[in-house]
Image (cartoon, rainbow, N blue to C red; front, side, top):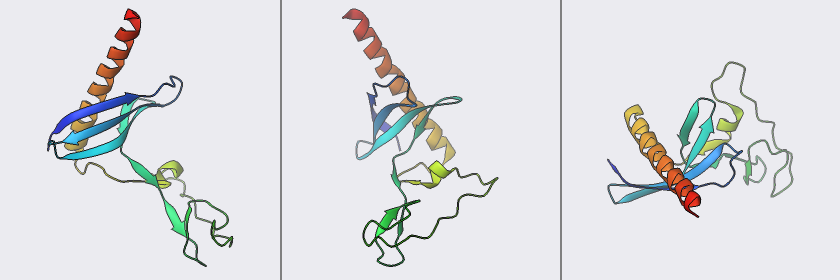
Length: 134
């Protein structure tokens, strides 16, 4: 599977970790939106699109966001979620989100990251050269 098109939308906030969103089309037949370009401690990386994890209320089964104290539907107290134990690899912020789509193999992930970061660099260069001209 080949990334046939990569589009990047830069974010305006230079002091934030989120640098851009990318949309990648595969083999001209499948698209994945909202891939994030993030500035981490060791450089840029991509994060796949995700959604917040929700847990059902034991009384009414309404799905509430993780760490809610009361149900947004029936106002019943919700059980306290156990926090990750020390030494567990999953951070709290990662536990709150679940990927919607993600690469299964490391080589594919590396290739996707390389393509998205190349497109990000090109888009950033276009914006900077355009602002230098104007």
